[in-house]
Image 1 (cartoon, helix red, strand yellow):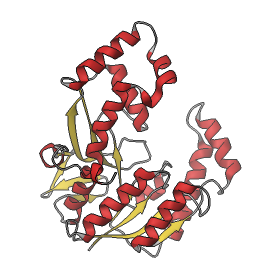
Image 2: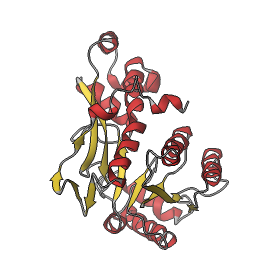
Image 3: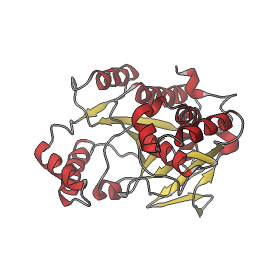
Image 4: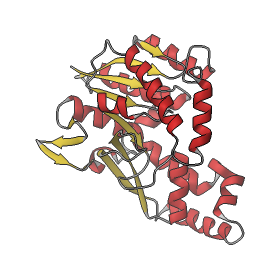
Length: 287
């Protein structure tokens, strides 16, 4: 049995949807070799309504939850470190992350997962935990694409006027969004419905800067929304497919390298398998 630890802040419905999709695929036999051994959350009970709903779901699914509030752990050190980080590299925040990660490893020490999955986990991991475990993360961009939150990625795509983007699963390293990719899928953001939206953006940019458009419209901007819609269609199927490949031994992680059939690869394109979401849209079925 291929055992995983599931890391999530549990901050919204999307976090619950992702957990439920993977759990359902396990129960339906599509991920027959996979087991979620435990869930870790950096929020405590009663901290937010959304995380409490996430904990309730986990209990209903029969999965053990380890919760340890990052907000309550050495808050002064963390606050000073985050302020320092805004000015550049911060030793204080690195110290805080290392200490917090050690508490995670202590609490999860009785488990022996093959892999940790970051599924809406809103903290950056430090070097020690990345050395101890193989860890994967979902990122809404192609390998070598923009880094940052999904919102930051989309604005960077628009700023660059790019023709395509994608989603990937990558290994986690202390450097944010920079680990080796396991799987990825690409899709166009030009042509068809996108052309009119790009033209509308072009007209807006004659009157305002992209920063002003972002500040005024944010996630409600039409081109932004359409790119996000296409990303979301692919995120859950990509996660499920990647976990299937790993649990069946078709992909293997050793150290900081990804192997397929004994050979090191730099990411497996899986467009054909999961990038026809109109026919097999796992996300839409969860709404």
